[in-house]
Length: 550
Image (cartoon, rainbow, N blue to C red; front, top):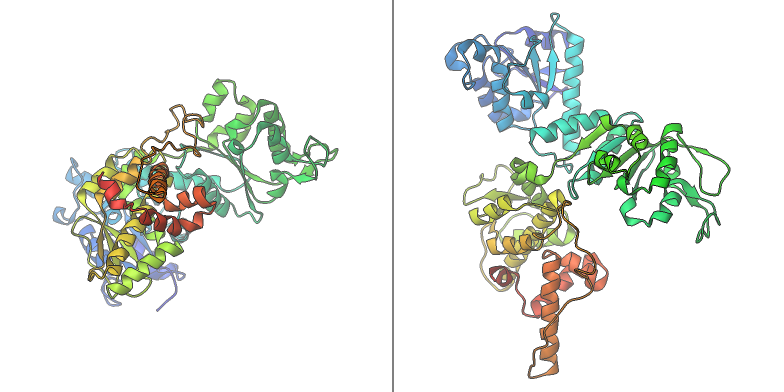
């Protein structure tokens, strides 16, 4: 088998297929019916049928726009005349490919200069396109095929950067891929939990080509009087408490990427110094007479639009312009991309078993039902679900009522909240199954059903989270170290103590969204002892399922 990239052509003619076969020896042309068959697939229905069975034979698709074929072989375009259907048939085929194989790279070929009539602007924006305006422009075609292949490889390597299928997110990814290169700063705006820090590290830095480190400075976690020292560095004795020389983040991030989170918290008197560093590429540590040259890719983030801070006088307009509003990227909230909810839920559920504790639970269930250790875990909707193809798998079935809860939730914590929720759903569902196995019950099916009561309980813990528009809860309103309990008399001091402890655990469970790892951080100072906390939870007679029903 050849190790060359494999190209499938969908076209009612053979011009592009011959160009690949005769002049692009670096690629292998996929001939659908074997070496003696036609060079390409001549219509959409046949192409979709072939790809549904043999997509693993194809690395990239070349798709023509115009198809001059009989109407019964055309995919429909709503409200279009026969002439229009033929002229823009490539768009209809592209839609079908995307619905069946959303990750398969497609290069759409067209000689049309005006695509304004195409009722698929969002779809076209997110595709690799090339315009064939002057005959067979082979070099342009080579470049576009290579770009599609590279993008496909990056998509697989960056599978944890969960872009989803929403057109807005696909357009955002292409824009960030361009902004990642060079020294130009990047502004990421979006609500808490939308993934700004993740994108800065796992996408912008990775695609910047820089060899230096990725360095983070969260200005929301620093007292304002210490921000200059953290940004620019300081010599010993330059300020009260400076007992040793300190390198600033610009110096540490030299030849790498500096991510400044919550940039709007920079004090006004420090913003002028920050502007000079960005303009000159030189930084002077506090108390020093010498400047250091720094080469840093700067990415800043804010949970509020920076132009609002400029308007309110809290952020210098010249610093804002130096950061470049043209590079501003707004990351949508999860509630703005509801079509991605199930896709992301499935991804997070599958990722949850990479946690050693969850993976151990999964393996215990797998062994009990006769599956190999390490069997993948997939989320399916309702009683149906795809039958396992090839590799055996375990299924986490989300019944209709639980799915409706997920769809109607406002997701104030966005992607971060969904990731934690799916981790907890998988953990508790596996724990219930393991408990049943340990109790001697016969479990033979690899399908586990999620308890809607559990989902309701976990969601209730985040329902009161601030979205960023409300006044945040203050420490006086909810002190994490204070819990009110009611003393109930008992027949022994131990019974009274257990009653107090149960009330405390219930309140802690609610405040932490049912996450035992977070509870163990509060109780024991160690997030890795969640199983011990859950054991004590059970010893106190507290059951997750019963709490959910209440």
